[in-house]
Amino acid sequence: MSHRAASDDLMALARVLPQDRDATLLRATTGLYVQEPPHDRDAMHRYEELALYFLPKVGVSDRAHVAALLASRSDAPPAVIRALARDRIEVATPVLRQSPILTTIDLLGVISSTSADHHRLIAGRPNISVDVLRALALARGQTPVEQALELTASAAEATAPAVAIPAAPAEDDRDLDGFLRLQPRDRLARLAAVSERHAGTPIESQPRKLERVLRHAFACAEVVASARTGNRRRLVAAFAEILDIETVAVERLLDDASGEPLVLMIKASGLKDTDGRIVLLLANPELSRSVESFFRLAELYASLDPVVAEAFVAGWRKPGESETAPTAPKHVPMFAENRVGRRDLPPRPAEATVPARKIQAAG
Image (tube, rainbow, N blue to C red; front, side):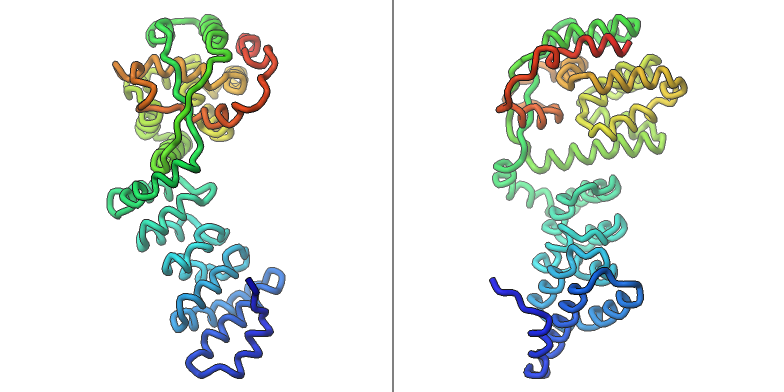
């Protein structure tokens, strides 16, 4: 596919008909703009005035050409990028996928005024904020987004990562009251025993639907945002949504004075390590008052295998949920993406598969 140089557009400017001159001038000016290194504020402002004047006057193919050229530019005028992001999907696609200019406020504006196709592109952007995730979740109930997701489910399942189906929890792992009564050292011994029991356990997997990915990302973002703002009600509700356990149980686990239950909830939720440490620090302020206590929990968090956390959480779920058939689980632990992705690698050394010594060291 050949690419037109900016000079070609300038040469064509003298030969075009008057009705085509606007498009040719916009193409030529944009081509010259992106050939230069990052522009200063004055240059951005001059190009912005010209582009905003001509964009409504030109056709879809010309607007799409401009969007493709500006999509990855960090010096693209924000007003131009916002206009392109709200345009037809063929124009907005490169901008919504790539543009570093779009802020949370910009994306919220796009969600409020565009279609399900635009929403899917926004959902695929890296590092979107909790406010954007919340807006996307609300839009699913107000626009045809959910129907669109169902229409694309078969394609999404072909490319979405697989998730693990956990084994049924052991009887000893179901006793929440008994676990909370244990002293910290006894809890670590129980964790080490469960770790040894699950070492090398084969994990079945099934594909993740796109909608489940989005719902889990939204709930995880809610956990982090609620911990940051100290909103206990939202934090409890978000943990209950991710882990599928009663809110009363979440409150008891969250309020535990020693902190091991909070580590188990965070690990079983599948939070990124950086987000997990933020929640560990802020979810229960009492746990972070002691530096020694916090670092003990941080070390436990770093050494704990997520499959151990999932074994405990599976036993604490709502009655009957932990016996759900593995072919159609209501809850699927998100840590399994990494475990399944490593299934073709050579087995780890024996000391790496059983973090019992690390767990004991954390005490």
